[in-house]
Length: 363
Ligand code: NAD
Image (cartoon, rainbow, N blue to C red; front, side):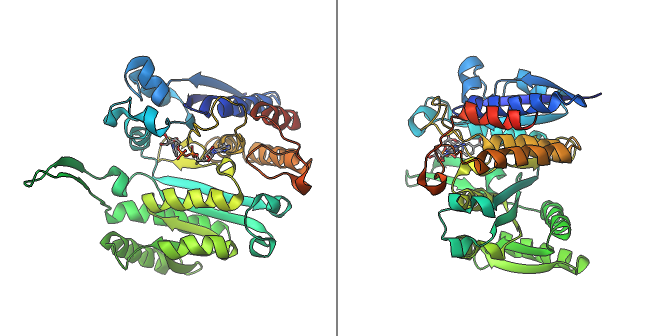
């Protein structure tokens, strides 16, 4: 029997509630008898900071280093609560970015998928959403503005200032662009390159690297779209996109818009792939507004566990089974409170009930 160790970083806010559902689903897969998952829970994020003064404690680093793969929930607090943590230990700066940097998880896959049967979840009109949505957003995850040098100080006139740098070298761009071409080749052979070269020189270099890669992959049709226009097209005509590639901050923002056109961020899983180790997390945050209420939609978390099985543990069939099991719950007319009910008849499930039904569907 195959055995895998998974570091489980439940995190803050709704993180523990939705992670519990992903664990139920992994246990249901285990029951089939082909694989054993050793789950290694570890503190991460604001909860870890309040427990031991570090949001990515050494104990958690060791657990992640030793694991085959990492499954992460959500981190972060509400605006006011966050101020109780020193700036450099606040969850993204103190835990999330160091996690990404440690494992060099440069390729972030964010599927924006809504089958036709669930098109009523989307706020877009039926004639806009057509046969459903199926976009793969690919975001560079360890470069750009989020990882550049930062300086804060007071200038000669006594004014507070801040300086943050946006840096990419051609190799950083090339590896994510090659990932995007490889993905496009497996799909519809259409790639939308998202940039801002009319203003940013980083985008000029980015586009040069895309053009060089395009010459190596003539089978792929490349479209160049300014990021601001891409935001509009996502709402007006999402069907034009199949694979999209973009730098770190553009991807952070546009992928949340992806959640918006699906109808909820709770439907957005993600995979963060590094050369040796990868981690998987929902695209959304810790949703402090609904934390502890057992109302969060666990689909993005369960979907991230499915991506983990598919992309890191060579278990595509099980990943597809999990996605089908989630769709079956919706097909039976159930929803979670963030989604509109079919035909206006509410058959709401709590976070835990949704997880139970998905796990039962895998038996
Ligand atoms: P958020 O993604 O947590 O929430 C935005 C909105 O979406 C909220 O109304 C929330 O209730 C809703 N939502 C999100 N996930 C949901 C789910 N699974 N089911 C139902 N509704 C859901 O963004 P925010 O409120 O801007 O940020 C909250 C905290 O999360 C902040 O501290 C932020 O820094 C952090 N954050 C963390 C990550 C991460 O862990 N990778 C990503 C984004 C934000």
